[in-house]
Image 1 (cartoon, rainbow, N blue to C red):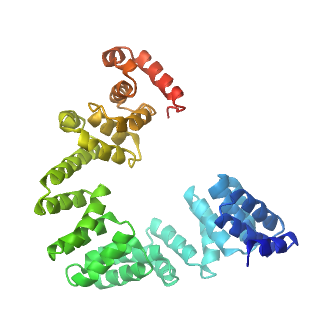
Image 2: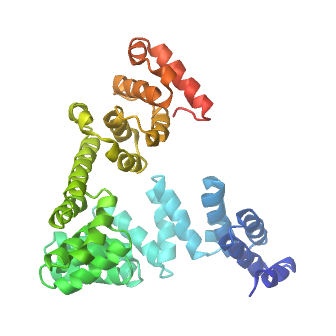
Image 3: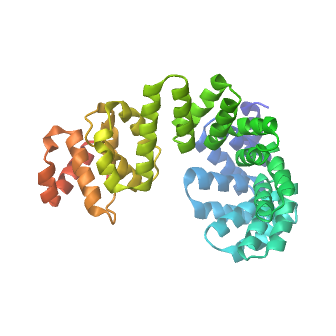
Length: 385
């Protein structure tokens, strides 16, 4: 049914059509219009409309309290998905006691996600027997998270056959982690099947699977097909992928590329480990040819200490690709490594604008450094965190 057809029914007062229209509008990216129709359905008393309005408030509006209020109303009306959403919300803020009865009500309606929630609650209480029973109910209902947790449990208790059974069930449900772990379990006994599951996980973006698939193919002498997988893993900064790809590059006569990749892997290790003295020692080894890859790495880092470490590493390079990360590092908050962060900002200022090529002045006058950082950030419409 077209959106216009559904809208005509909604405008005629059909609550189900209002809810359906909201969903169609969401799929079209018309999120504000979707909220209007979800709200009309919810206010008209449709429980599924309340559920969807809660989702909208949580994901689009950012109003978690309003979302929870709508889920509560819908759950009271017997809407199972709202029971689970309400329980998940309660559990996320540490209210296990409040979450449990809602999980139980939904699980009594054979909801697999609710069964998984109950399993987690029992596992947190160290009630392994009850947790396993609920994990099995959730897994039988199709929840791949439960299948994975059962696989892990049986792996820890020395039951490889049952472990493989649950990894396979989850992998067949398109769970990437399970496909990878199933391949690991099978690699010693059935290389062909292991290769198939590695491929499934690698195609879904699992870097460890891409590495292992590349290695398997290389061991079979198929370097042509091994290379794209090892390259994928290396470009995702997987340490084993980088190492194995460097080996393949050397085998195929690309020594210069192999050396560059080896150097990048070493830099990545230093950034991860926050080895400040070793980073200082490694700075002269950074070349212009490393910069673009290291800039790409910078944007994958999700917290400030490794970002500071990377900027420390590249600060001697005068490369235009560095300017965005130098601006970004000026936003870094003061940490216990205050002196290190401030000196990194001083180095960044020098690379952003030659007027600030006064490192020693900033070293001695931190107030001047702070003022310069504020001026540059304001000029680029940025703020410190």
